[in-house]
Image (cartoon, rainbow, N blue to C red):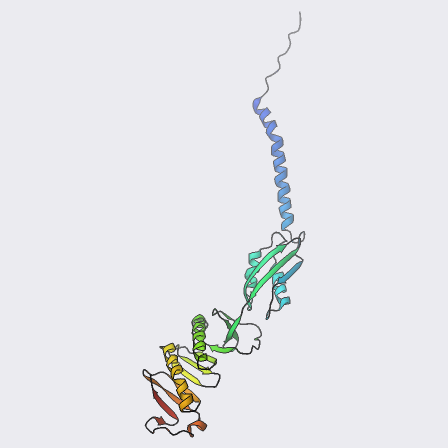
Length: 268
């Protein structure tokens, strides 16, 4: 009698499927682990550090070494992980920087390009103002020939700057330069020209009042042959002129229009 052969158990389909999936899963885990390690290494400042900071472009007032030091202080990661937006924001906090951009250069360099503020005038005793009306205060004010001085509240700087440019252009039409502008807390305007004429404009209609003065200034020069000391334009139909003492004694005015060196002139 022959021994009856044993039947082989049928293979488990779930086990077979699990064995097929196991190796791809292990391979995926190894790849993810390796990628994570690689990312960790790339983020480590000691592995791929930023070693060089370069500044591109022409700069006039900025200290190049101070600029490079500011970038180095703001670096917070490796070559790949360093936050360029953070560095740019830090640079734009420097007084002389209007705007900045930062880029990576393989393998260990950051290149910085900055646009300097262009000063339009001095602002008060400790600052400068740009043509866009931005006030900035460098640690040390440079001496720049030809800049006027504007005085006012920082919040009003854009408006004061715009009006200053208009006033300067208007006065230049009669050969006058504008050296000082004061705008007080009441928003009253006073100007000083390059020949030391004080022009009082007040709070309202400052440009129409200054236009009235510019229209009559040639008359003051040609007919009276004097340089006024102060002109008060806070009148509806004219303005008053205060003459320098030496000049006032040289010209005879009608007694009705002259009083202690002051001449009242009707508007045009």
